[in-house]
Structure formats: structure tokens, C-alpha cells
Length: 155
Image (cartoon, rainbow, N blue to C red):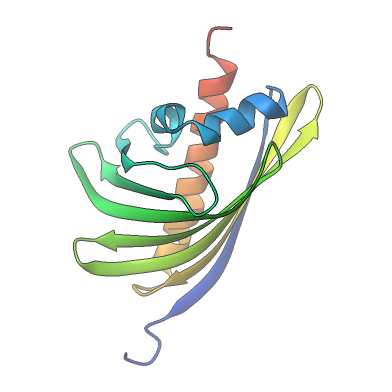
């Protein structure tokens, strides 16, 4: 490995969502729902090829532009505390090229009548600092998509 090939960063994003904590957590736990809101923009897509929401379970997803979901994210659930916290370890690939290895923590805070969702990602990038900023913008976009999905869904 060449010098300066590994870049580290911590990304923290938060958003208040106007739904109960149980509902926000359920939108993460259910892969079908997650597929509806996980893309960070209208031009992106998040496709789950495998899902297993339990400690030790694995998710495999493809993401990227709608016409080119070239990135593969493989996640393992390390910790789940119902309606409070989800921790995963993830790798991000483009083809056979490993782009990043991350630890993701999603926390849910009851702030009645809504929920504050906080995502902390400890990023190890093998392709430079831009991956850290892409992680920040992607998670900000995903939280905005989650809020829109939950707050505008029919009850």
C-alpha cells in the first residue's frame, strides 16, 4: 500500500423527523421500506439484493445513479437495540475495487412528538478524502429522504 492511501474521517449527521421513534426505527428495520427512502436524491437508487436485519445478519445492496448502480455495499449488523440503535460494519466496492470500510451507528432519540435520528460513520477511505465527503452528503440526503418518506406517507 502506498503512503497516504488510507484516509480516515468521522461523519455525523442528524435530523429531526416528525414521527414516533418506533415508526422511524421500523423504516430502517424493514428492507422493503429502506429501499424506498435510502437513495440520497431523486437521481440515485439503492437496490437490496440480500437483507437480514438481525445481529450477525448481512445486507448486500447496489447503489449509485439510477442508470448506473455501480457501487456495492456489504453490511453486517454488529448491534441492534430496538428503537434505539443500529450498528453495522460496511464495505463499499466499485467492481473489485475496495473504496471504503466503515462503522455506522444509527441512533434514535425520542423527542416527542418526533424523533431525532443521528448517524455517525467512521470512514476508512482507500480512495482519498472525497469518499469521506461523499459519505457525509449521502447520509444527509438519505436522512432527508427518510423524513420526506415518513412525514408524507399516508397513515
